[in-house]
Amino acid sequence: MNDKPAKPSSDQTKNSDNKTKNNAIKKSTSPIGKGNSSRKLSGSMLKYLILLLILVLVIAVALLSSNYWRQQQKQYQQLKRQLSAITQQNQTLQQKIAAIQTNREQLSKNQTALNTLQQYFDKLKQQNDQQQQLITTMSDNNAKLHQQLLGNDATWLVAEALYLSRLANYTLVFQRDISTSISLLNTADQLLHRTGNPNVLPLRQAITKDITNLEMIKPVDIAGLYLKLQALRRIITALPIMDDHISTMEANKNNGDQKKLSPQDNWQDRLKININQVLNNLVIVKRKQGVDNFPVSILSKDLLGQYTALLITQAQSALLTSNQNIYQNALAQLTAVMHKYYNKNATTQQILSTIATLNRINIKPKLPDLNKTIIMLSDYYKNSNKNAQNNSTDSSIQSQQSTNTDSAPTGNQS
Image 1 (cartoon, one colour):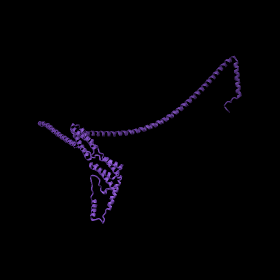
Image 2 (cartoon, one colour; image 1 turned 135 degrees about the vertical axis):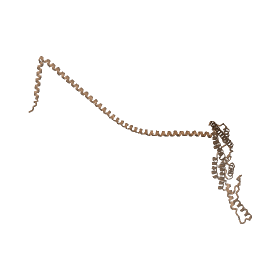
Image 3 (tube, one colour; image 1 turned 120 degrees about the horizontal axis):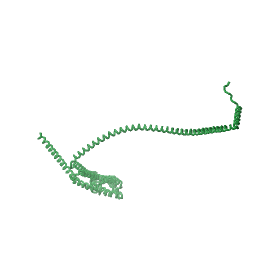
Image 4 (cartoon, helix red, strand yellow; image 1 turned 90 degrees about the horizontal axis):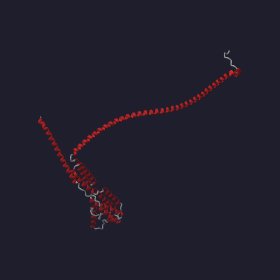
């Protein structure tokens, strides 16, 4: 049924092997067969060597291939890592490129805005140049006009110095402000110096003399003296009055109250008392020198305080108006009142010393007269104006003559 041959059994294989071994022994025992067997052995050994070499080569190739595979794996891993690093770097570069693109867009916008600003600045520069040219033109015109107004003798500066001198005189006479007057005169002297004309030297000399005279005057501190008098008023109102004057005032008041008309008085006494009362009510006597005899009506504490305040106010008013006589008279009366009606203590002595110091101050020092300098400036200004007018008329006449001489030959030719 089966076409395939049957496999030999194990006994058959053993028998066949034994037969081949016996045949080999027989052949080896024969002298001819010995050479063949040695050749066979060398050939088998050569085969084994070749097989061994092949096996060694296979093993070596296997080892080399395994090492090569490992190296390839390592290189693959390295390449993989490098690829991942390159990928990350690529992503970073992409982000940087996107940021650069955004910055480029922003720079383009900024460049557009900068161009707009540059155009605006160019317009402003052009306007500034135009304004500068206009200012230059106006300054040139102003310089020409200033030169025309000043003339050769600088009459405009002299007129300004004359005005400042008059203002200094007004300030000195009516306000008695020495420092302001000195400042105005210094300004007038500087204006005359700017003229550069040696003819104004006498004017400058007169102004310098006035400035020196003003600087020699000791200035009066009106505000400080006024405040000192105000402080004296507050201190005096708190001082106590002498006890004997208080008792005298009370006694005079009681006597005045008790001195009334009685039925027992005769008609002469009654008439005398009535006349005295009427005169006391109607007539008030004021004395300029001394305060020894005060009316009885002011010998009370309140009225005495009001009277001292009135004297101090009078001194302050005289101080503001620079009235030396009224100022000294009011302080003298205040000194007499302090001696007569107030206790002699340390405070009173200090007040009296202060009043004496204030009384010695000259609130109206003698001031120099600036009218001479003003007259000199006025005369110089008038003369300079006349000379300028004469020069202008001479120049106009000369110009007319030149035009006439120019027009004469043309008439002859015609």
